Structure formats: C-alpha cells, structure tokens
Length: 295
Ligand code: ATP
Ligand code: MG
Image (cartoon, rainbow, N blue to C red; front, side):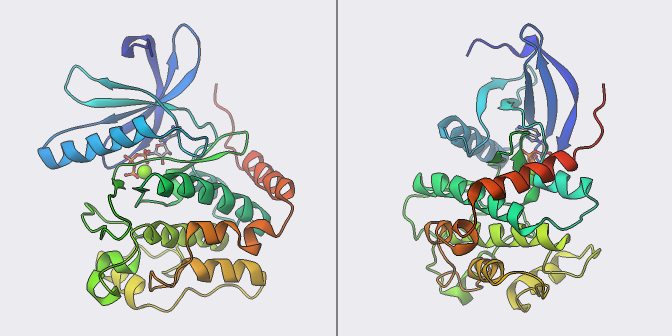
C-alpha cells in the first residue's frame, strides 16, 4: 500500500510484549485507526523469529486472522507491522475488565467456533500458531475474534514434523512440547494448538488459569509439573455435559487422543446451539465489559 510511517500519529500504547510495543496509531489524512507493532530485531536468532512472523502475516488472508496492512523498516533498523486495529481488546483484557467473572457457555461456544475456524485456516496452510492464549485472541466490536501474534509460529513441511524448536515458554504449552519422548516423539504438531485452545476456553469459564489454584504466580518448574503430571483440571458441577466433553477432548495429555480442529468444529458444544444466539451472547458480553471511553 502507499501508507507511510510518517503519516501515522501515535495515540497510546495498547500492549507490551516480548518482542516490542504495540501502539494505537491514527492515519493523519483518513483518521483510520491501526495497531502498530514494533519488533526489535537484535541478534540473528531473533532476526529469524521476526522474519517468520512477517512471512506468516504477509501470507495469511482470512477474516479469522488479524490483517497486516503493511510492514515497515524503521530508521533504527527495527520492523514495524501495521495491523488492523481490534477495538475491543483481547480475550484477556475482556476477562480482566469483568474482574475475571466467568464467561457464560453460550459466549464460549461462539469463541470456540471462531477460534477453531481460525486454526482450521492456519493448519490447512501448514501453520502451527504455538502461542494460543487469551492475550493473543483479539476482538472487535462486531464480535469477531481474530488470531494474532505469530511471534513463535512455524510453517511446517510434514504434519509429523516434531515442532520442538520453540523459543520461549508459555503456560499454555502442551505436555508433548515439554517432554516429546514420553509422548511417542512422533506426534502431530497441530495438536499443540488444540491443547492451548482447551486451556484458554476453560480459563474464560473458571476465571483463572485452569492448571493452578487461583491467584498463584508459579515458578516454571511448578507449572511444568502441573502440565505434564497433574490431573485434568476440575470443572464445576454446573457445566453442561457438552462443554465438559469438549474441554476433555482438547485437554487429552496424549496428543494422539486429542481431537483435531475439524472434529471439534462438529462437536455438539459448537454446533449444538443456535449460532446467532451464541454470537449474540458473546456480543452482549463484549459491550458489557468495555472500560469507560476516554476522549
Ligand atoms: P506477548 O509476548 O505478550 O504475547 P507480543 O509482543 O507477542 O506479546 P502481541 O501479542 O501481538 O505482542 O500484542 C500484545 C498486546 O497488544 C495484545 O495482547 C493486545 O492487547 C495488544 N494488541 C496487539 N495487536 C493489536 C491489534 N491489532 N489491535 C488491538 N490491540 C492489539
Ligand atoms: Mg502476545
């Protein structure tokens, strides 16, 4: 496109991450809002990671994935991604804005369906996201959820490529990514995203990270033990059988027993209720969770 970095005014910071800072920016002439994600490049490992993120964002073209309008190199040698602005924040910020009050099941069905459609798009193009979590699922006022942050994603050649070259750590990582040998070694790389989706949806229902007691800020060893050796997370008595079953299909420790994205898209939890009803439940939840508008 013919946008220039100098035509954009920084308005505020939207978030900080590992790689850099995300700003809300406005195009001076059109008034259109965007998110500008700056990535510091640094060493060669980091350079490869950044170029992966850029390659994937340049390639993807789906309403289920945050759109990247442009990629700039900044005068200081860093990279800046001009992204579609998602005006309702992330599922993490929405959960926080509700003081971590549980999401109702109908809204979770809409969320699950949308994220599964996004994963279906990515997986069908040999992309494993590897960092699905509430903060990387962005939302707009129309009730659309889009997958963002391809900072640790990977394009894989064969579906059984072990997906182990993970740099960094996340509480949403599946057991086989910690300890590939005890899980058969030759596992399906895509199944890791399904695990993370299951944890994400369950967290939105429980209001806290499912594998640890509420409020705990664990060290990395505690977390790894909980993921690899812990019991499946408890679910409240009040959840429906469909929801319970959906979560347990996602959170199978053995990746070969985990359901695929395509199987989950046909799960009764996702297809069993009227879609417009669950979409409306999610839209209501968004509009009741917005922080006061600042002018
Ligand atoms: P982390 O390491 O925390 O995952 P990151 O550096 O990889 O972060 P992102 O996850 O892409 O960066 O963005 C960080 C935060 O910035 C998001 O959680 C979200 O709150 C905000 N953000 C990112 N992109 C957008 C966007 N397109 N629209 C609105 N907000 C955004
Ligand atoms: Mg992120």
